[in-house]
Image (cartoon, rainbow, N blue to C red):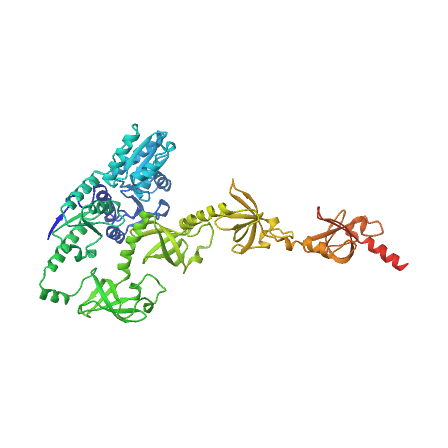
Length: 639
């Protein structure tokens, strides 16, 4: 079998420049922080971290005394402003081709033109480009998306169109040709990097004459994934990050295999893959006797093997991998779930795909990991979800001050606290040990970030639409109290927060809604009023049957007498509590047969007095009581 290596494989100019700069700084014993992973190659990034480089997401995270390296992807203008504000020593390794696009983006904003960017909106390079224009900007990934964006409103001020440096060449040509036909005055700038053009062209040519294409590079690398896409049009194409991921079954029946690599792939990894491929092919050609002998040889770190479970204990499992060594998989290498138990995950006789992590020939044992292999496979699914927007499910394993850790396809995904709940201030720690649905936002090296909030927001939007389509005054809902204010309680009744005014919470006078309900309470409410234009809903909570005035009307006819406490004193009389929520007034003239100059001279708050109900105005909610009337009656009885 023939192996053909692409001439253009490996680091591009911009990446090579950034990597050399960073290694040089580390060799000079400088404290180095990179804004994001320096390149989309986990092995290179891990080596830099091993040598002392730290990765930060923003200037605010840069430790004191550290110098900052801006990676070749570039950053938005506001990041430069933050770096200057902190007076940080900065080494700008932005690729010259990317810097050119930044200048074009700035020019578009200064001229009031709309900027259209061909690329992946979540890619750091595109985010940097977008952050350099002050005008309207839209990102599209294909001709269909571009057509939807070309509305009269978006194009009325003129068009600037640029491309992410690693954008697929054929897609760009298709979009550029369409724009030229429809908008003759559009300013179109071919900003795809020359190295990208060359790599994609060579990958296409090589794929046409090969039975298999092996593309080496980080799975989060846009450049690498474009090469896979181009090659896959003409032949079978696979991608690997390291030689350990090669599968000999790929080249069964293949006469010619082409090898290329993304712009972020170090030459050392390319050579390792080529060497391993040659070795694997040589082993495929061994005689039957040699193959038997080979099976007796020690396995090596990074090799993927199949193992049959022979025993299970709480701390580890034992497997047979078909060699003279005994295989062991410790519990922590079996799963990422800290609460899982080995006996619940596997049983004796199960066949597992495993990766070798350590070989001890002296003791005749091999240590393996299922978790690491699952992580590699899961990472592909997670990375694909970043591109597609697919919603994934995961299990929340832990929380910290910054947010949540969610296990998704055996991959640890970080969900920042701002993205963990729908509303600011909600207790996100309650999600620990629950299943959640989340949208993947970033998958670069060890930086894997998701959002639960975006999924909840989308679900709420759907609930909100359904609510407004069916709501009507008087309709009852079961809702959850979400927040309290001085003037009422906001209740979620299905994607919409309605307000229960404080006056609608109780028939009694209350000073604050917390006297009746608490955040998190599930309560029954009904719609009192609807403002469809401003999307506002007024809710009622207190029930008509609980109205104390109805109870008063039934139990206290005019002329009835009773004893009740004085609850307040005014210049004109005293208010007496008849029942909770209902007070009656004993006017100063109705307190005594004698002239009363000052109410407080005769009565005090808390004093029990005997009164007679003399009049009720139900419309104005006023009740008249008299103490004097009872005194007169007593006098008549005495006579």
